[in-house]
Length: 218
Image (cartoon, rainbow, N blue to C red; front, side, top):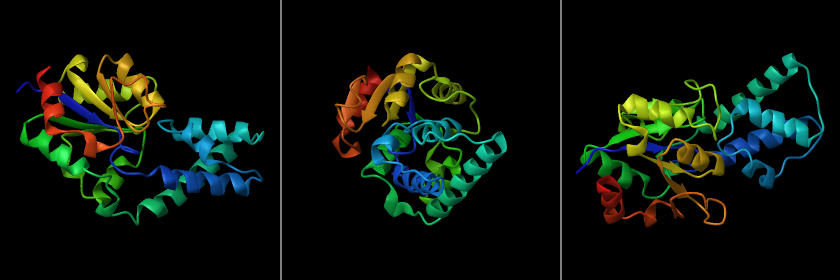
């Protein structure tokens, strides 16, 4: 088998923390006097906390001082952390451990490439931290997806060329980042949303060993 790098996004790929982001952002928007919908939340997938708050304030036609902006970011993250501190391995999405174990057993490079600054905490909570050879998260990058920085850094951390890397992503911005990095993009989610990906599956239960072998040896 060839050696390739497999880079996993976190939210919506390994675990569904989007629901906790949504609740925390919704509570924050409500405290400022406006609502925040699930449709709007979809537009924040793969987007950094700073850019997310900018979008939410714009949707609510609300402006705040720089000091208040930082305060709101901290407030949101504190509530989000309260949610994720209660997580356990029951929240891992179906068949993710099977795919991870297969890649590890076959000596493939496995990395996390996520905008989340809480990635390590979440992986610890769901007992998956040891599965990843390297982790590149929101603490290691300055540019948000669709900029490919997070994935290029992950490839570098694995010492594997970008064109020999595969990315699992659930967001449009993430798929675009993978494509820009010249990596194979595998969308996890809706074909209607992730149509720019090279391959699309509803979830990991649809990803067969044969498919993984084809990707590795291609």
